[in-house]
Image 1: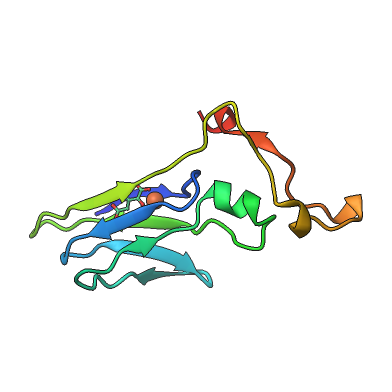
Image 2: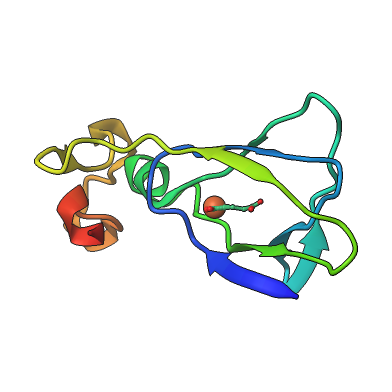
Length: 112
Ligand SMILES: O=C(O)CCC(=O)C(=O)O
Ligand SMILES: [Fe+2]
């Protein structure tokens, strides 16, 4: 059974999944299994990091798939800027020509 699809909004979510697995990531128009490796954490790119990098990195679509045989557990650590903080790309990553500016600043409250 396929659970929710996620495009994380925060910066760099840190995820630990158990050895049952079930985390998939959508790359090149296909779902790929993220194979669980003992002691290894998965770091996703969230919307805040994508914005800070001015779109050099983009948030990856991922999902959790569960099965009817074995319970699956995952633990995710999210870290978000305060709602009143302006999230915007580092100046040195913003092209000087306005026409090429990809990401404008936003407040986290936009995601609430
Ligand atoms: O359950 C999982 O492994 C994925 C959870 C996740 O990525 C999320 O909650 O944003
Ligand atoms: Fe996620």
